Length: 379
Image 1 (cartoon, rainbow, N blue to C red):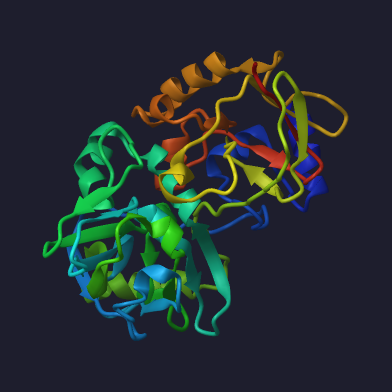
Image 2: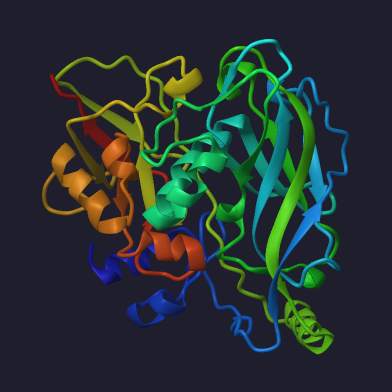
């Protein structure tokens, strides 16, 4: 599409003033409005140092039912403990006293949903376990290789889980940084307290073999920067200014479709859940029901196109086949995730990992919910 068409479509969904010269300064994502914002000061390294803070939950953790999808675990973010929050992990310690070995699924699949709530309990952002798993694509291969064992995974992105012998203990981590690292929240500038809420998935998703171990501790590891008080106060002033503050982050919009697929056929999915600027989209086809190790297994498809309601393609001048999309995965992501798993990423950005990690803008497409995904199956 031409820039003019993109500008007109942005205005049609509530945007204004979107032009080529503004792309590098544009940071409205998901359903958030497009507009003019004040940008907070750059995060230079002057007068600050990196710290980690361990925070206990504000709700009682049920050690014997934590993995069964019962209840929720809340962490109220302490604005006095850390100045700028860049990422976080939920740290889970377990002991296997079941009398036999058990196998835990990758930690993203322990999650039904992670939410960030404001002081009144309103959801500000959320990510599901499946989306958390796919977000690992934005990590470099070096980063993932070092994290994999703590996520109950292998460096080949296997979803066969981690075995825990009877009588053994382990410490594992659920990554939360995907929701925070682009925004770099200054907690003291937020009115009211923010809460991270973990809702765990059911037993069929978090456990692959044996019986669930006992959870002995759950805590939130917050990582970021401590700063002198004068710097903190300047950030508070920026957050409380009357000019709207731009806090870039990427939320997730979801479109799900249940269909019975046949070989050598074409299928359409109207993307009614998509609205506003979209940096890129994961396309995943999974067999139902999705349980155990199968929740990280995707079906290869023949080709993909994304079109306007009128039939004009948004991704190029030809329908992209399986090999075309795998080559694009290799070009866009500095890891082997896309080579090991048959998900497909349709990118409107030249640097989706940079966008996701820093809040920069390297390309997007504006959606109004009338677009459609067209994909074909192979033999």
